Image (tube, rainbow over all chains, first blue to last red; front, side, top):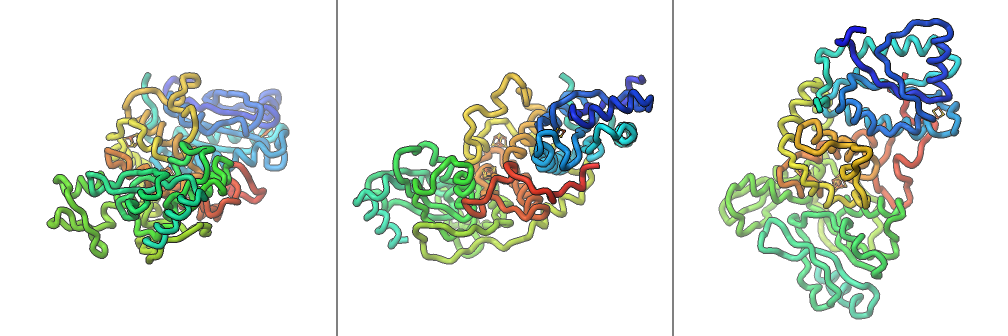
Length: 140
Length: 308
Ligand code: SF4
Ligand code: SF4
Ligand code: FES
């Protein structure tokens, strides 16, 4: 992979999107290697502060994916997460961080194809941003 | 006001309230001093004006389990109290709310910046403040933006000071909507220009009634949410995360902006939160003391169109 390619940090729910990634893999569906995966037990485990921290420390984009509404294995984790993500997304965009850097999705365990499409979409979206590094990035 | 003072005096004498928390004039006329007393003879010293800077609910935590405390609250501050009540932090029966007719609240640092001279006297004349009997300043220009987009409260006060509620006209968040139209780089440039001055003194946190955590995220080593230092990135990380914690809790009282010695327009961020919650969820923080906290509940039909 070209080192100039964007680095995208993704948080995938163990019960759905992570399994979706697995299915994409076993079905031999190709998706861009830019997506680095962190497996989480539920989208409700994703503290939106992770987004700030990731962009600050060098991720070019962040992608968070969980179970479809109604399908969360803990019943309501994704409903709470939806409100939290909404707030952080509005804040991020309001201060002038490019909206393309942040993507949320619902991908189920059976949606290997959707996983592939999302991974391509997220990568292309981040590539479209003119400045390579996010304004929040600071070299340590 | 006199009637209210008499009543407070009586309540103190008869032991129905433990103390009164309010403001008294200080040596800087642009900034009245927070004052607490349990002595009925002190009650006459209290004053209510545009120059009462902090939100008194912040101080309530210091009086926990002390008994019933009376305090002067503007509508946005009553909403802050409601949030603290619905979060279980304060009991309604432990406070005696004195409703204050609001005219907005002046940012003392901004006033100082505008007049650029030592302030010896201030006098309110209609929509202006006459400083040192010489310089006249529009109140609107020395007030945080939050005062212009103030939301109503379902009033639940124990006593009310007579007087006209002369809150500045409601602008329906036009400044926020205009800001939304900017490009990302224009937005970032604005925050660079204004927030780069932040020294991370945390006055905005100390003064905030919603910032009651014993350990703040900025003081955490592991995880290190925000690096120490004054790079714009770390300053913005602090403000982004702080604002995230304010969602549905901040009542846009403007106390943080009035406390900021660097005149950073914090109420642009707090007003943005208020605007989004009202527009997309019909939610007004602290509208009453029974409403659930925004991030503590959900509805199936909540906004979700931003998720693919
Ligand atoms: S009060 Fe002002 S200078 Fe101090 S941390 Fe807050 S924004 Fe920064
Ligand atoms: S963040 Fe500022 S405006 Fe909001 S409640 Fe706290 S002090 Fe008031
Ligand atoms: S278990 Fe997948 S979002 Fe909660």
